[in-house]
Length: 234
Length: 127
Image (cartoon, rainbow over all chains, first blue to last red):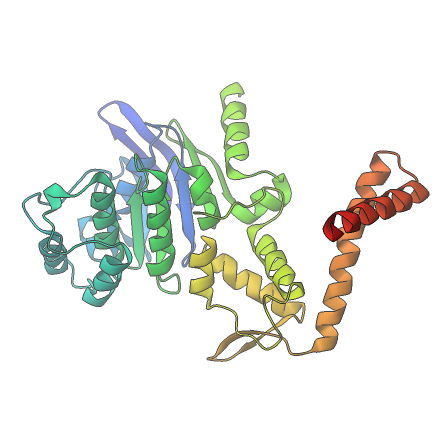
């Protein structure tokens, strides 16, 4: 699985991430939380091989991560990345042509689950349905690592709920590992095995949800409030 | 919509508690098959790993049995389910009594208060 060893990433002179060391446990769902600009997206892009570390190393099963990791990593960008003139089905076919691990049958099931019409042009879709299409494209790949950057951001509660249910239904944790960045801690809490909190480019906490409940006796939102206030003080 | 979970105890234990209550209410009957891990995860909006832990915990307690390749079933051991009922009553009473003691009520006051309350309830439901 992915391992980061003392990774720093600078954009020009500005440090986006500094001295990050972490390993993902295979078959788990990890949430990366933190304020805007804290480095969450950069962390995911490093794992996806989309940006290179300024210092340190990122490895996948012991091999350095490069752009070619794309065949092992399904990366859902915060940006909208499809062609607006395609229909949903054409978008699916295009994704399938790019990734040999794309599973048409799963795509079909997710399409049905999410109530999407394959004939709809993507540009006519509601924001919620565009988000669902992105989830479909990401989950229909049998990649061992799935990275999702803010999959719930800016969506109404109904759409968020259907996306969370879709995630649970179609992620295969016996073969896949999932990392999600999010602000929606209340809704995502019951989905996570592990949470990593980032502030100003540094990991300020990395803890399993079970330890959080058992040892700290708080939920994720309470813990975030505690963690972020105490790291301001120090 | 997502099920709400309390913050004070791990979700896998809360889910186990919910299933135990369903057994007591006979919503789940001896020998009945529980939903698959994934179906249960979707229904409850929790991580499938969490459901797996819940099922393992219930199995450890002797309340469910997992049969290879078939799934997880409520035990048909009636004796075990009878003791489950006693255990859950005991736990609930213990937490009630602790709360009352913390407020300074004596055993007699708790008992008389409980009797009055139950009698009133009975009166209400008879109307």
